[in-house]
Amino acid sequence: MSESYENLAGAEGKARFFRPKRFAAGKLFAEAPPRVWFEDNEFLLDNISVTGAGCRARDFQPDEEGDRRGVLRLTQFGREIFSAKARLVRTGLDRGSVVIGLSLDGTSFPLDDLIRKNASALALGFAVSAPDRSTVPAEYKSYCADVMAFVGGYLNHIDKHFSPIEARLDSKAREEIIQELTEGATPSWRTLLEEGNDLVLPIHRNKDQRAVYKKYTERVVTRELTGGNSWARSYHKPMGYPGDYKIMNYMYDGVPEGDSLHTQFLHMLGVVAGQPIVTRMTALAGLIIGHAAGDKDRCSAINIMSIGSGPARELEPLVQAGGGYKWNATLIDQEPAALEYALNKAASAGMSDCLSVAALNISFRDMLSASSLRERVAEQDIIYSSGLVDYLNPLMAMRFVRRMYDYLKPGGRLIIGNVNDLRTGTLWAMEYVLDWTLYFRNEDEMRAMAGETPGAIISLESDPLNAIHFLVVDKPRV
Image (tube, rainbow, N blue to C red; front, top):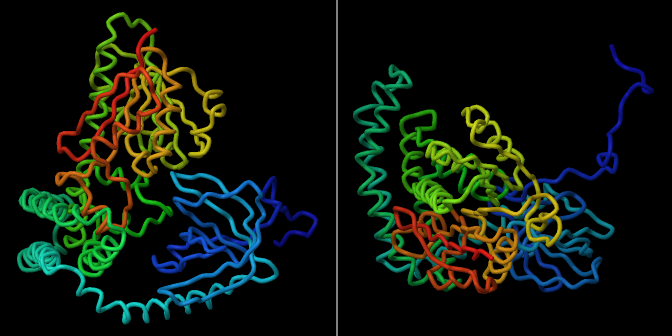
């Protein structure tokens, strides 16, 4: 039975202030959104509605005036597909980049028309840019061909020997097949990944060359590997950003995912490429436990805080290590689903006897605030961040380290993980295959992050695969 009008409920709270639906730009424009220009500044389009757009930039320096007016343009491959008057209505910080909000003046975005125009510009751009592939060295083209021949060889093996019986296999038998194939492929696959690092390291800091290599890699390699869930989620970024907690859990769990032996094998190649995520976690846990063990006079619980915690899988080895420690963990992340997962994982694993977990769902801007975080957490014995600083430019990374160092107790330890720029790292797979852009730092750049912590004891550590640097900053006791 239908309800009478007087019984129909409207929105509550902030939802009463209606806003048109916002769409993730990557999803709306099939992972190739147009560029945004406003007052001669170029931005990455993050989300869009009929009335405005949210954008990102690493180097934009907004002034304090706010509500600035200008012309907003959308372009794709140099072709303008939209232009209108707009206002800059907000700025802020999020995950290491500047975010801005633009509101159209007196008009709206014709979204269906923009999708069509964007696709047409892309098609024209591909035709125009095809000769650019000749600027990719023959050695790199040959390498990409070797990668695809390696992958194709295993897929052909699956087609020949397993596909005829695949429909009759149960899930356990399928998993055993994929695990055996993965075990056999891993040594050669890791060698190929290192060869890719060797080829791109010399050009990586050249923006133009990097873009050419990436475009070629995505056309030749990425489109094939994304048949596997680990590659597809990392590349398409359904949460709007890379490295969400489900991607992390793919690596931690290390089990086949997919609806066929083909897709499961491709998924597991991504898990092998992402193994540094696991070794980063185990090395991090070791650094935390090592610091706790060094305090012979401790008689109270150890306060630890994870910034950008994700699923917080490092809590498991902390508890499993024993030692009679009592851990008070504070997990801080912008993703509510990641915090919910971490809390449920801690509860279901029966870790409550030696682990107390609290979660804070706050923004990156609040993490850097001098007051907002201090009001919510006590002084910490150990603060760590295993992946957040990968996204921060040098000045912002230094500011972050200084702020976290201030939150430590005397005798406390700050641990910062960051992908490195060595051949044993993840550069080729992440940046060139997956468009997963990070700051791949060397040892000097790692030490520079502690440049505003005078008197601190600085050291560098690495994970077992030598893919991750750890900056360890110990605060002297008073």
